[in-house]
Length: 277
Image (cartoon, rainbow, N blue to C red; front, side):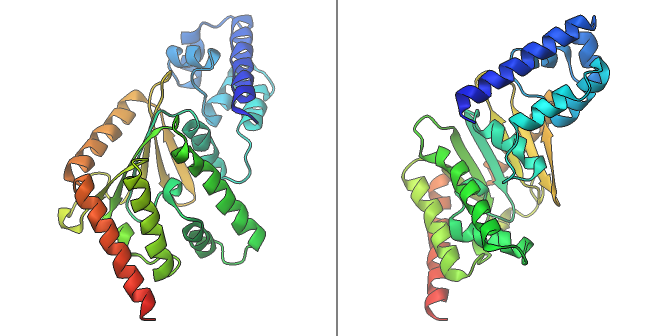
């Protein structure tokens, strides 16, 4: 679905929400209190400024007795089977973000991955899948990453733990290529990357992958990931805490130019290992 038609569909979602809310005799505040969001959020849903999470759409159906209408509409609008259900909404939000900030404690973030790196990660978790399945995952990730090549795309800032540079995902030659890809994006000024060195020791958000997203017309959100599950945070107080933790990570990380040198040095180390095997 093209971005224009997708937005029009969300506007229809919002218009229907407003109509059915008013028919049921609820104010925005009253409906919000019943589905555990603020009345302001209900207003943003109705204006298609913000998209509800799936559980909120389900609670709206229960409260307004709409026989699953909003859940079905939500699933149709966020219906990309190439992504896990818990991540599909994040992909939708990335398309609208003006700034994306990530912290990666173990793996290169998806938007920075090469095809070879993605294949290796996919097969490590799914050793019995078909080649078609793997290539579908690769194509989906490369499609997401195209935003980094777009002059109108979001500002992208990533903090990588030094651990990420050391693990030879896909082999040493593949890892050298992956780090060269990151260095190239940095040198082209398409992304800003910092490395959090081992010497920092304990750090905020210890071991947790985090992605922060900012928007022109909606409040920021934060996404964290666990084992085969994800958590999209939009409560302002929680998002603020994540932003503060991310600021501490930025302060502890190496400066961008030092980080770039370390990334390129790690790439060379992997390349030397590949040449001797």
